[in-house]
Image (cartoon, rainbow, N blue to C red; front, side, top):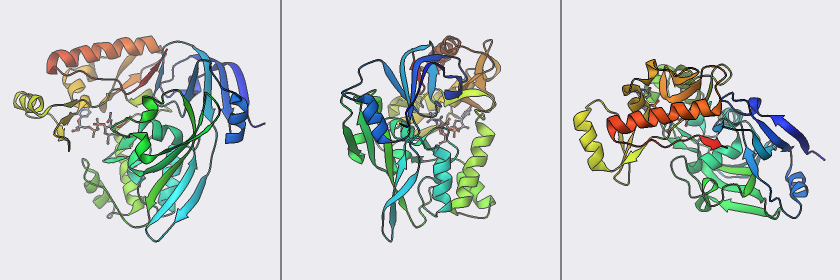
Amino acid sequence: MMINEYNTYQLLKHNTFGIEATASRFVEFSCEEDIIAFIGNGFYGKSLVIGGGSNLLFVNDFDGTVFHSRIMGVEVVEENDDDVLIRVGSGMNWDELVAYCVEHGWHGLENLSLIPGEVGASAVQNVGAYGVEAGDLIERVEAIALENAGKRIFFHDDCCFAYRYSIFKAEEKGRNIITYVTYRLKKSAAFKLNYGNLRERVEALGGATLGNVRRAVCEIRRAKLPDPAEIGSAGSFFMNPVVPAPLAAQLLSQYPNMPQYPLADGNVKLSAGWMIEQCGWKDNPHANVGVYRHQALVVVNLGSATGRDVLEFAAAVVESVKEKFGVRLNMEVNVIS
Ligand code: EPU
């Protein structure tokens, strides 16, 4: 058996916020057969599937079973002159996958360099950065159903990917354990450099190559985002709000410097980080919780914060943004209670 099972397990090392919480039971598995055998005729208890824990906020001890995949490996399942299809174990570290693809000359994931977390979560969360979302490249997701240990395959369209959204956060939430994700990557250049100052940084490194794009993205992220090994956070705490064009226009007339990103559907995405900074939160930590000095969208644990401390602080941030801009922020982080 490759199942590892622990009782009353400390989750501190499994959440980048650095919150102390225990799980009644913690189960790790390294192949599909083992998790199928473990589930048997169905698992109906309270459960949570975690990846790298980089998008979780524990507000209590978890009185159920936490599952964590240790399925590793990258397998080329199909290749032609243009594309390569790779099937990747859900427990693989995300950035190791991006580095592997860059080394092999496969295009698509390079803008997603240095995002914390694991492969399984890339599908749940549809991780995105610098104009690329993982869902754009996902061909299929394989999973084992908790209700009957049956194998399930979700093709791209079944996953309903949208901004920080997939079916695994909605109808399928809590129903499956993702085991493999298959990505379709390109063998020739398909760079996306239009976000922010990415193109400029890539040019400064000597021009668009896979290695330079990865380097530039890593540099930008290191400058703006805290290293989870040093400061506890879950990356962006809130999602960027999407508002109707007339409201965006009204806000722009009031705040001419407000960053705005018009979307294809006519709505406009606003920058939550900018609004939070305008509300003065960079200089206003509450005891052991604050926002990161280089990126106000990132709520940070300044030392021994509890999940409740973080939630209280977040509620004050939401309130202030609502009052100043009339816009409601929604959490990106998955609150576990
Ligand atoms: N801004 C400020 N002050 C701040 C933060 C941002 O003025 O404190 C301004 C920036 O100057 C810029 C705009 O807001 O004009 C957008 O900022 P940025 O490029 O840093 O991106 P973001 O919208 O704040 C999103 C993602 C990040 C991702 C970046 C780059 C969400 C919730 N967050 O942040 O994702 O890395 O774009 O693509 O969509 C994450 O999800 O954990 C994450 C880090």
